[in-house]
Length: 254
Image (cartoon, rainbow, N blue to C red):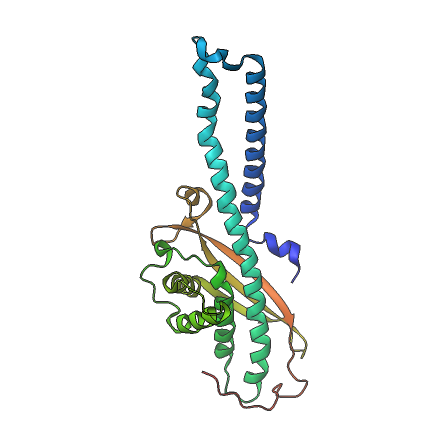
């Protein structure tokens, strides 16, 4: 995976908005601090004794909505960019899973191509759980990922050494990841044993701050806005160099 082109794929606009909003926040902060210092140094508390004394607050009142908008954009875009990094990890996990299961399905026929794709998608879903939304607004009523909830809750409890884990929150994250992560294709570059396997992943990342999704996203059909984050990762195949390309082990996997 080439990091720099991939980290911008499908989120070019988000990077642009994030950079401009961050620059605007810094610029407004510096300008307001400078204006306040100059105003205080020249006139001090005399502002309150004059007819136009209260006018010193006008710049704050006028710029606060704009400042709040830029802060919201920075926060929202930062969340989306973190999610983008998560999709890069998930795409790698899917590709690695495909590499492992490809040799199992090649010769024996026990593992079909569809089964290999399902295994890869399962790996991607589990990798996306930490980056998925845990909001009830985004996953309420969804039954996706029901078979993954139990193992994830158990693994989380073991990892946290028995400390409290909110099962409802984690369940919502699992269900959102399962319902909005998709491996659209797994492509093989050639018939060579070490040919590249490329997994193409799509994840629907939700917007959290009201209003911003109307401009940067698209309706999900469920009352909130999402953006399609697309990522791909490639790894060389590790299938054996024989006619059947299997490793001679009969895999019996659910």
